[in-house]
Length: 274
Image (cartoon, rainbow, N blue to C red; front, side, top):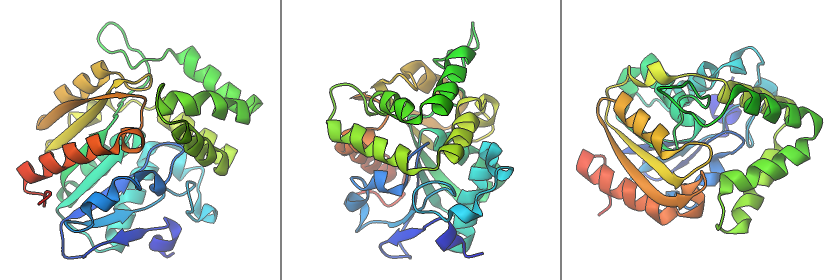
């Protein structure tokens, strides 16, 4: 199977430059990075892809067994790197659930990555008092999946504005709605179950490579406290709080994400902005 076609892989820039690999979040696709990539055209070789079942990937390659858990999506990341013959020094830029997926990929193939930039990570969405508060009770997430079953468009109209964040450009919510609606609802529900019921808290503690954790100041899906937890788990991480509402700063406030990436990559020697 041609992995580059299967995952709709697109590349930008000089293959000899430092590598940025972008991993999109739940219900999204690679186009969500369109406000970020122009800033790194001169300095990096950029790789974009869609998980199987998302965006313009080959839906015929979808496996309900493989993608029942996040590990299946982690294998997509590894497959894309192998197809492009990337063996080391990859900087993974991951959003939302892809942060957990990236962590799983790093555990499976630790030599592949030099750094990770994690935007809005949440290793576990479920509350586990008294030590961890992911933001949701089991009943909340169960109800969300039931709504997907009973009224998919209603679920989209509820979730898209929550992800986009209050006070942000309404077109962002529209782009998210379009992305949610363009995905097969059956596939979307399985990705939702794999995303919202995963618990990768212990996995984050297994990764020691340098990470930048970017958390949104006002985010219903992943609070600042969750970001602080991730920062504590990752032994070699830096936490930066973005003064942003919502869960998609790369879409709503791309300049803040770019600025943070420039600064971090320059310090880490990852081919920063010049």
